[in-house]
Image (cartoon, rainbow over all chains, first blue to last red; front, side, top):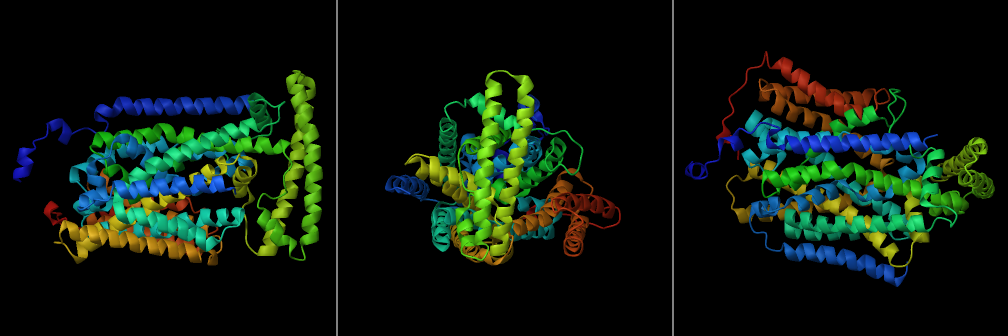
Length: 49
Length: 570
């Protein structure tokens, strides 16, 4: 118990919402994935039979 | 293989193994041994997560998949970035908050000890068998292609991995994986450059891509809803998400990689590193296979790339059939070559009117060569009584016959590194789960740190011995790789279901979840035993998970739950 008292964390760290400060990174990853899929679709259309 | 290749192969492997063992020789507490003292930076975690997933089969079979079926397989990875975002946002904060060593420890704080032990047991069964296959599968292909002794190859990979994994634990696994991944990326990059350089003079990189396209190898995305199409955008984004969520969120061999992070930030960055790079990496490996396909359109080659299988048929009464097929294939390949020259000429002169019929002719002649290859594979099956996937030998055949001295050794080091990195991750996780979830929880709760390190080392050694023994007798089981995949799918759904209930259905308690998990697992086993042909085994993942979620939720209205006290957890 005493250890817990010594290392008091800010309330944000304990109750951080799931997407918290990371939402920009997650949006970037999803956007990157979207661009990749678009490029793959263009590749399929340009060279497909 | 030349002496220089042996030196490159032996030197690379020896350096990585000795570096890993020496650098991590002082792991004296359990946190250091199982979580690497929580000292890993995101780059190490990212490469370690990637190396654990990429087994030797990735670098042998995936180019073969590109050679045979083109780029469509990449769609299977479309769900992976989304799964990693969910793991990063939901799983990591909980694992860190509770300071767990294994994913299954969390289940005890949420549901009680029964669910924890059930999930840990299901993991040990499936991953224990998979570790044997991770060693066996590349060993059988390498020993066939190189004429090496199978037992010797299995023992070489197995003993090296056990040596540094026992010695240095998680830290050794992650550090060696970083170097192994470096060797893998360097080797694959150089192999790709060599393929392009080995194309005929009149064929540019652009021509090679165009030829692959007109021969149907570049269809990377397919939006069809036809269930008979094997790889589509929709199956990748749903099935792929499901599998990746099970694997990265609940499989200890991956959870242990990112729990070694210095902070949740480092772990999340390691996962985001994979979310960004995994699809391009798979694309690149498949594209390498497609370029090998183009290369072999211009290069004379035997009807089957697994020449050992052909030689075996030649010693049976089916030899004359094989000789006939070989001659027919060479003639058909020459005919196809003429059609290929026509297509290239019309492409270079922009003669669109002549190009279209030339492409039709080329594809017809290509189909004729494929039919002969199928007949040759059937002959092998008749002669040996077992199936051999010839596409697994395509990339190895290219490495051994067309790469310069030195690079052959490096590419073999790539395959060995991949085999060792994934096996090490598995053995490390098996030992951690056995130590923390069974030995420490049920047998000896109050041992010293030193005691648990010794126990973990002994268990790593024991799991290594089991994996090597299983690899040595693996040839006795027909279609073994598929058998292990089926076994994995039978258990994965239930494990993921338990975790999803824990995270998202707060009203469902331990008794309801445990009963739902047992019911779901029994249902899947009954389906597998009695109607295996009605449902493709990949669907077991989905069915098992949904059953746990739905039944757990319904039972929560009727079942009385005991209160879980956090201090109960060991």
